[in-house]
Image 1: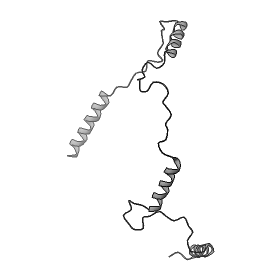
Image 2: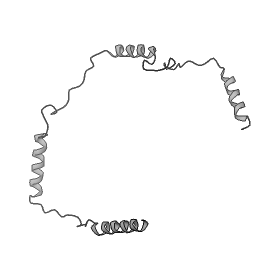
Image 3: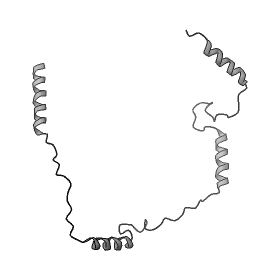
Image 4: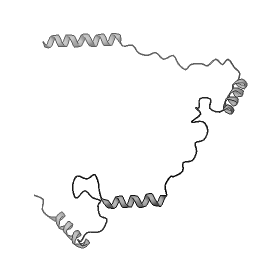
Length: 123
């Protein structure tokens, strides 16, 4: 069974090696211009002046400036109101917006507890 698998793998690799062909490199292509530089320059200038010939009417030219349909202060007040309601999509009762107010633990007490925990022996 193992011999047949080895023979099959060798046959497939031989087939792949024979059928694989590398791509040939022909070097840098040379350009044989039909028109002179002056003709090409004149044609380029005329094309640049003509505008975008592939533009559709909806996309031609400069897009108009967008104007807001609502007042900035109104949007801000609505955002603040919704933020104060909490997380409407939360599955838990405590899924509200976190408070930015400081806790009732004193800073020096918290620092002392952290130092004590860092000096405690590791189990």
